[in-house]
Image 1 (spheres, rainbow, N blue to C red):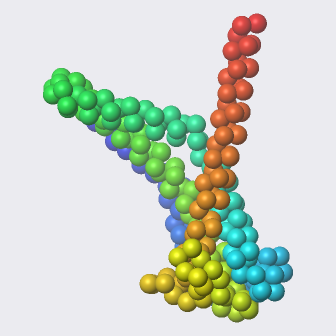
Image 2: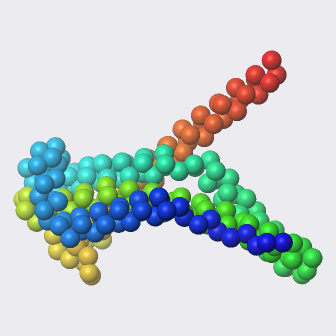
Image 3: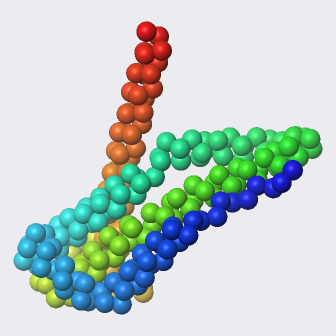
Length: 219
């Protein structure tokens, strides 16, 4: 029996990812220029004259994480991803149980099936990687603008944070600027909320579609 192998990425996908990565590298090399250009858009909308840094970071995070999460979630088949995750979890549990029971026959059969399971898992991972360059094209320019805003447009940079009474958000914390940690704390919960809302809506639509199919079959 021939062994199943992981699906090879198509040339078009590799070309698109390469172009996207080159664009990301270009943005990173010219992040000051990118931040300066985006300042004409974001500063009048969410800059607040540089007086309210935390609301600016919150709104920039909402724009960044909201847009990237929506694009990533819509580009992926979340239903298939959830199904594959459940199947893989059940398969791993069955394989662990077979090893605990020292069921050599079952271990052999499951080990043979594991190649197919790993192939499906790799295919799902490749689809996730396909969305990464697109989201990075959104994330990195907004990061560039936030850095430019704090360096050139923010008047007040002293804020209160959970781990200190007051800090200068423009200072560094270890090897990263302080604002990156604050920005991350703000964006992660919002990103999780947006992702869960989109998935809930997709699952709801799928259930409604299944119910309508069942009703049509009954009639």
